Image 1 (tube, helix red, strand yellow):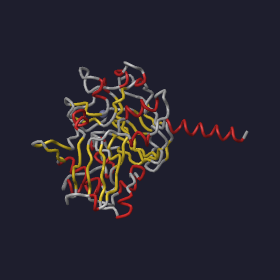
Image 2 (cartoon, helix red, strand yellow):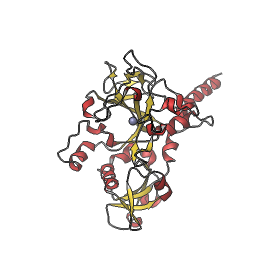
Image 3 (cartoon, protein in one colour):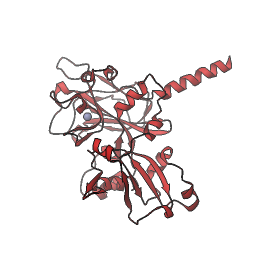
Image 4 (tube, protein in one colour):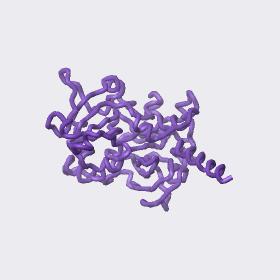
Length: 334
Ligand SMILES: [Zn+2]
């Protein structure tokens, strides 16, 4: 009896781990084949549905969109969206922006989740209203209502009523030292959101995650999903102590040579959105060249498919890190 009971708990725990994320609204049409336009809000009526999806989906493949624009299902008499926005998983509120004029996200919320040991940050943007009692530091349950869908943003182009959506992201967090780095990288520029600036959050493909965890094959693991990202390139950093290593120890690989001789740097695999998904410690004897940041290799097929972040570029037959790529490494290792 006891054994059965224990087995029952085990099955439940496994099921929860396999579908860690819920949809942030009642719209689940992503699961209806061919019904993409019921789920995604494209950038304009004549644009394809995937302009509201994740990836290099805008400006002919040259502009990144880091989230899903999930279409509105409910409106008030004036046609304004009223969909309740729900936390995608159990977590803790880490940031609430209630000054829509200070962000292209408009009013937005960031929630921290711990899933299979990985810190993942969900973000919900363009909100019209935030639950009045919601506070930073507060624990929330998956499915708990946190806000109401809206159209807030500080961009010149307003979000029209027919495009009303929630912009939803699932991110890794880059660096706690973001405010100090930002001050140095962009002297004199305002940073209104501290470390909760979108530049400090690198999104994973939310669409792939929601589809994978729903797959009849089952067995979804977020950790395996992150570890299994396709590499855009491998870079070497001559840095040995930066916050990402402590935040994501599950992504740090083993190297007996570095264990024995000491770590002099890290070889990092980046996906096309600069998510560092594998970090290999390297000993001094394994590192060629003296540069602080080195580009080791580029996956040309991946670059051909997804180049909009412009992290690397081929100049006169040679691949190199762009200023954007170098800036990402500066931030990662700051
Ligand atoms: Zn969006």
